[in-house]
Length: 249
Picture (cartoon, rainbow, N blue to C red):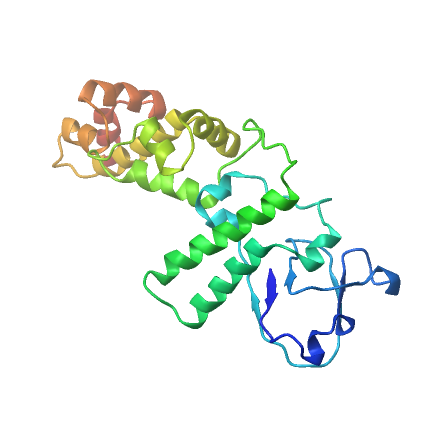
């Protein structure tokens, strides 16, 4: 995303010096570029530009890093539009202007403010050019930041709330959408993933011979030793006691 900041009226802002094309490099395909230009990721773009000095704000961002937007599709194949060469959006213009001011003179919570502005820009572009895309929850996936957040919560400790409702809230999704998208992303259920994390933690704790089995069970997130033993045997093929003896022998 680019917004020209060069004062209007200068020769270098003449559209004859600022041309672009998504459709190849034939002369007739080039169109004048406006103050706001959007080039989607992975898009072939051709530029013709005269020699001059310009000041511009250029934003390169990955929706996967922008919180809830990570859950949506961002495939621009077949969705390029000549209107992207000269966006006529007062909302985008004002948002990017605020972003330019923040970059030039960072204020309180600048990083958070910048992220919010970028999220607004990404959402507006998606609404404008991908609004007809069917975001069927059965085909949607979680983004890397959401997966990392889930892992951190599940690995936090026995006192952490790891309920489905808590996990869904953290990802800004409904419980149903989280479950579906997690399965589409990893090929396993959240319940299965959580169990694997608890077992891995238990295996590490069992190396400490001073810990009782019930202490390991609690620290790994199990309600009691019986539930831990059953889950451990199902996953590893041995009881915790057998596993510990085998490792220590």
